[in-house]
Amino acid sequence: MNISDAASSVDSARTRGARTGRPYDHSSDEQILAITLDLLAERDYERVTLDEVALRTGKPKSTLYRRWATKEDLVLAAIRAAGRPPELDELPDHGTLRADLLAVIDSSWLGSPRRRLNIFAGLTSATRSSPALTVVVRSEVTEPYVEIYRRLLYRAIERGEVSANFAASIPVLADVIPAMSTHRLSSGGEHVQRDFFVAVIDDVVLAALHLTVE
Amino acid sequence: MNISDAASSVDSARTRGARTGRPYDHSSDEQILAITLDLLAERDYERVTLDEVALRTGKPKSTLYRRWATKEDLVLAAIRAAGRPPELDELPDHGTLRADLLAVIDSSWLGSPRRRLNIFAGLTSATRSSPALTVVVRSEVTEPYVEIYRRLLYRAIERGEVSANFAASIPVLADVIPAMSTHRLSSGGEHVQRDFFVAVIDDVVLAALHLTVE
DNA sequence: CATTTACGCTACCGAGTAGTATCGTAAGTC
DNA sequence: GACTTACGATACTACTCGGTAGCGTAAATG
Image 1 (cartoon, rainbow over the protein chains, first blue to last red):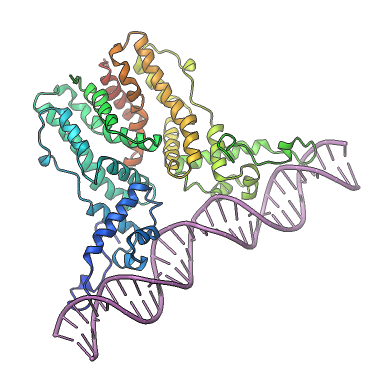
Image 2: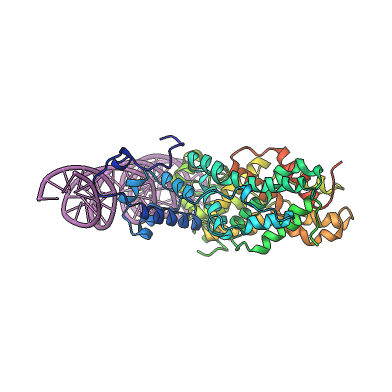
């Protein structure tokens, strides 16, 4: 199986266009994928077991394997079902970079800031296990998310809030918030609170752009 | 076994003060610990197997278990044997914060910058596996390392290079370099080169302190 | 009601890996 | 040389976990 269809379901009569027989139960798919994502928010990819998914969903493993060929497929599907991060178009211009950044942090993509962070942590651990997953996570989760920050930073330059002299630093600065928060989570174990994000924004990102918060 | 003696060797006649019999072969200890650390630089804690350590050292597993009661103990001992990060006293004052920071990055603690980074990555993954390891890694590896950055930053304020207005940001800024580099490594997969560290220092840390590199 | 397809259940397989047991042997001490 | 202790080699146990097999049943169609 190649990467492009890695999240597709197992071949079955349903995908072959049959019309009779017991119908495929799509509603339980959502539940399974949601619980898979829950688990991924709790632990590493490697510690997410199908036995546990089966237990929590109340579905037997055989049902899971009828829909997704491998654990990798299931997790991939769960990620995709969670939706992509918001696009720039959907991000209102709050007038200040600080407000823009906070809006991204406070967004409910992947549930909540904390859940999002936990999922990120669970996924980055998969980097060393599954090459296919690594690629997909990068292209569909990490990269689009960092892209938001990058574009918000450029937008701040465009509207004259930030000096264009800093344009070259933006690719690095766009990584600061994700890097600092995952690092805090994984090396600290402490809960990452909102004031931590605020400190990173004010004392690192905005300070590096020579913006001072009043 | 509690945490404080978690890295001690297995109880044996040697530790009971016996005087006869074949002597304990300390020299092979070093080799085993070094190879364990090598493995930890290559993969997660969980993927470091004692079978692999046995294979690479040429020692049977039984020998390993005669010296360290568990895998956790072995890894702990390997970390401790690697030595602690340099103390501030040992860090010469290069006159500029930039030079000081680069000196830390270029230091050979844990072998080389790249190896150090890989070991960090291998260890942080253990955070979710072993609570005891988490505590030790934090207190003996992560925290002393970040402490270096913290003190270099304060030193820059003391000698007047950096405005004292930034004192409050230093705890956050001290995390920037470790956070950015481990994030780069784990989420990217690309090799982290020296110019990346330079970019982080110049465009993030020094910029946030309103220092510009000539 | 016959047919078709998916589901629920349970038992199982196979690989990987932490940790154990045993037994003969090497390297010391008295 | 007797005794003591560690080492080398190998086999084994116990457990986890991804994935499979088989069988009876539920839910749809015609």
